[in-house]
Each structure stands twice: as structure tokens, then as C-alpha cells.
Length: 78
Image 1: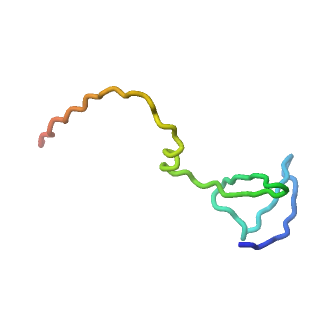
Image 2 (image 1 turned 135 degrees about the horizontal axis):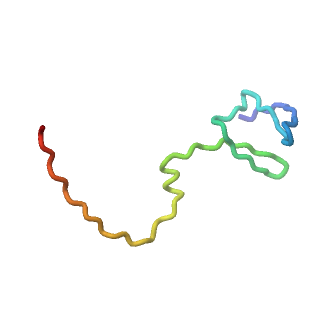
Image 3 (image 1 turned 180 degrees about the vertical axis):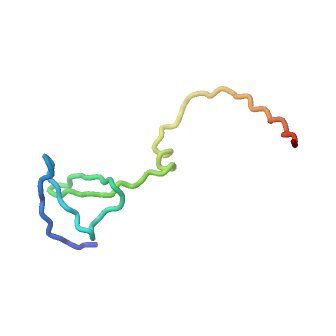
């Protein structure tokens, strides 16, 4: 999508803001913004799933104790 739109900047309190036209709307309600030279780049914030969270964790290097895990007694019919 190489579409270009002329937009106006405005003030929202102490912040400068821009209204994003509907054809440029991003999914979700959060985004990441970064400066690339004179450009501002706005990217949607991807929702993090469990696998992304697990990949971001540091491995545990500790020694874990043995845990007794006996087989439970069979259930009786009532």
C-alpha cells in the first residue's frame, strides 16, 4: 500500500496529534512509534501470545529438588 494522503497536524493538550484516515487505520488500540531520520513510523503493537512470552523468558539455571509424586489411589464408585 503506497497510498499517500495529505493530513493536518493539530494540538491535543500539550501533544501534537494527527487524525489517521480510515484507510490507514491500524488494528488494536496500541501502536509503537519510532523516528527514522525525519520520518515518524507508526506500527501496530502485535498482541503477545503465550509462546512469545515463553520465548522472551530467560532459562532457569537452578537445581530443582526431587518431588514425591505418588500414584493416587483409585476412586471408588458411590
